[in-house]
Image (cartoon, rainbow, N blue to C red; front, side):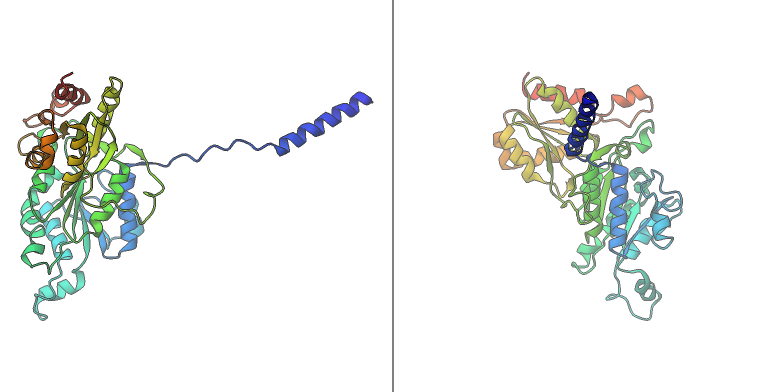
Length: 378
């Protein structure tokens, strides 16, 4: 009997201990969001926020977009705001410009153009290219109409259009579908040119582009669409935007400055991780914006590291890296360089189709590591 009382007493004690015990609570997992979904969120939030915003492009509606970036938007917003266009870059760019431009103060009230403008002017189109290689079909409208109208109207006529879609080298699509247009479009006054890398970049920059009164070119990367990144609580907010024209230091360092945009930012971070094991600390700058270029951030980094390497997937001649090097040479940071600036770029040839040749035509992590060691004389 005594042993039985002892058994029940110990059982009650064990239960009371369990009831008093505080179980270990794991911290909530950080939200992982792909670049594709971040772009989708940005458009969804801006479509909801401003009824003047709409999306048009080839297969963006019922098919959810060629790369599924517009998934679910047609079902939510309908035919009037998610519009499939014919396979004609010229027609959709012309429509975007007409919808964005506000001609009322310049157009006689009795004409047909006036009535058309009353119905559709002042809208904020998002024009999707299935690939920016196809934008060449409409470059006259992009450069001579969209980019110049604000200036030619003495600031009276804004042109709030976003041109977005995949840019640069993909995989196995050869010469006509692998070009980087960062240098092409950033050469032109009147355009703003953005090049996101991460999910946070994609969401914040696209939202800023949609709200901007200037035509903005958003150069995405097809190979980044399915890549997931941690999205901070701040970036999950519907009010989150990234200011245009401001670069981000992705990794601080004090030996050499690596400047890149789009997919090459990830390559630079991977190269920096390898070099850190050898005692070399690279500062990696994510440009985010190509035009306007954040020269101040690059100069401040060079004044600390005394070395500069630019990395891009485009061709070398008259490229983004060439512009960066020219600005540094002409500015105060030039006197801080301990070695010549180096450019890591794509090879100066049309993109080959064969995979082994393709791999050797675009920058690789080993190329960045080699350039860092060269500039540091290692």
